[in-house]
Amino acid sequence: MIVKKSRPLHRLAIILALAGATGVTASAQNLYVANFGNNTVSEFGSAGGLTNAAFASGASLSNPSGLAFDRVGNLYVASHNGIGQQTVSEFDAAGNLITGSFVSSSSTLEGLAFDTNGHFYAVNSSANQVLEFDATGTSLIQTISSTNFDSPIGIAFDTGGNFYVA
Image (cartoon, rainbow, N blue to C red; front, side, top):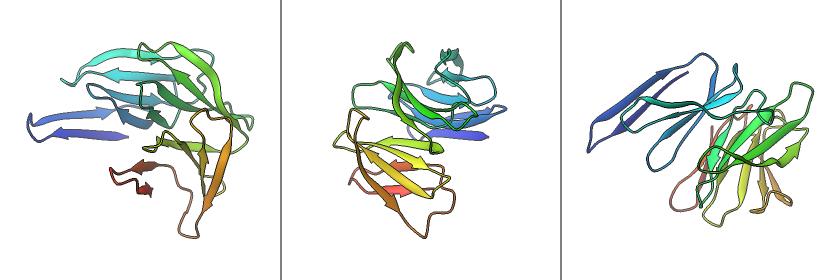
C-alpha cells in the first residue's frame, strides 16, 4: 500500500511503502498505519519520519486493518485472529491498551470511523454492510446494507455528517 499525505500550506508529502499496510488514519500531528503482517500500528511524525514502529502492538492485535480515532484521541484498531473472531481494540494516546475487545464480532470488520455524535461505525466487508454502534461499542444501533456495497473496506465522514464507503 502506498499512502500519500499532503498539506497545501507546508507542501508536506509522506510516501509510505509498507509491506502489509492495511489501514491508515491521522491525528492532528501524526499518521498511523496498520501493519497486517507484523501485528503492529506504526506512528509517523508530521515531518514524515517513523517515530514509533510499534505504537500499538501486543496480544490484542492480530492482523490489524481498520483504524480510527475517537473525539478524545483514543485509537481503535480492527484485528482478525484468523479463526473467525474479529475484535476492535482501544488504545490511549500513548499506545497503551485500554480495552482489548471494544467490539467483538464474527463479521469481517475492516474500516472504522466515528461520527460527530460519537457513534462508532465498522465496515463488515464479508456481508457488504456498515455496522453502527453506540459510543461504548456495546450496543449495535443499526446495520446499513446497500446493493451498491461490494466487499467494502473503508468508511469516512465529512463535516456535514455524511458517510462514504469505499
